[in-house]
Length: 130
Image (cartoon, rainbow, N blue to C red; front, side, top):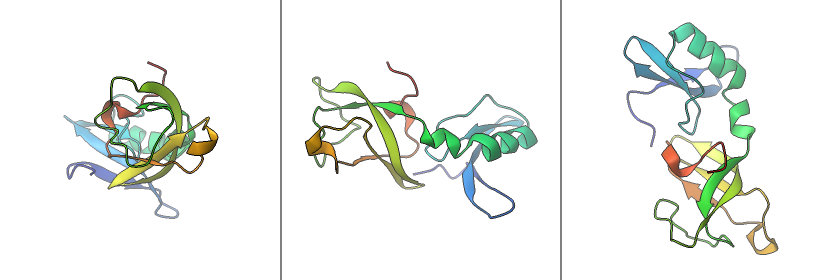
């Protein structure tokens, strides 16, 4: 669940939620809808500009997650088992309550396998292969 002190940032022309401004002293950290920082702490105006230009696009990237192979229904991504491996995943859905991912290169039995991930994702999703 998104933290109460995170400030939602909406795009002006259509009110689309673009991400969050996370207070950091007198600055803010532009943060995606899944809770991943887009950049360093900065003045609010530049953080808002960054969210407007890259906030949603950053969600279209491929990520890495520690998952079983193959992915099965009902796994708890927060409690990985020793035999799980880092796999490339895509974000399917995101809300303040959580997100869904699926393997980017799924085995046939995984084509409909969605894994719930808490938001903020913390270290559960990575932008580079560990």
